[in-house]
Length: 224
Image 1: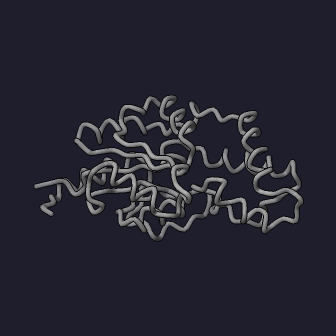
Image 2: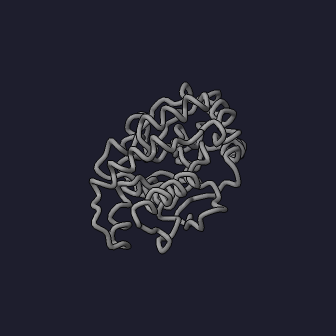
Image 3: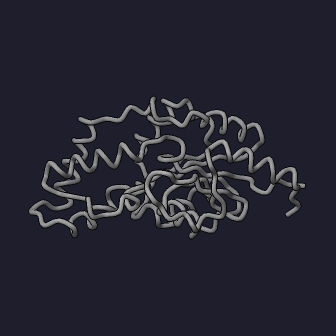
């Protein structure tokens, strides 16, 4: 008997660290300084997205003299001046979940839209770095989530078949990305942003639910 899955790929923001609300408010405050509003744009569209995929949407909603290049440069500096304290936002059960998966022999990947320096900071602060066999940033690709390439690449780096890989996501963009890449997707239940998670194969009430569901699958038994 073999396990149902050989590898598990985690999203980071909204899964391992509760950072999405902070990101949204920081983006909102920055844009307000330049007379730009995102009030008419559904919050769910911002969750799991990097700014590269958002500028066109923001500029379409606002008449402004500023272009994407200018705003990108200014926002980069704004983030430096308004950092996030990840130590208070790491999912409390993240380390225990990853320890459990490591003990069980799963290959573990991370596929995040965040830049690599941010990913490394979160993993360092949460003491999670050593658990991951592969860490991939959406910055490596022309388009990040919902494009499936980040998941296709991460599965390839893990060296397993896509049908043997499970994705843990929360956002609409992330779920679509993993689903389009052919992975089974379990979504952490959204209680904040009104996201459409219907593409997910299953839902989790909490991150620790990953361990519970995998244990249930083991009890049932899986022969492939």
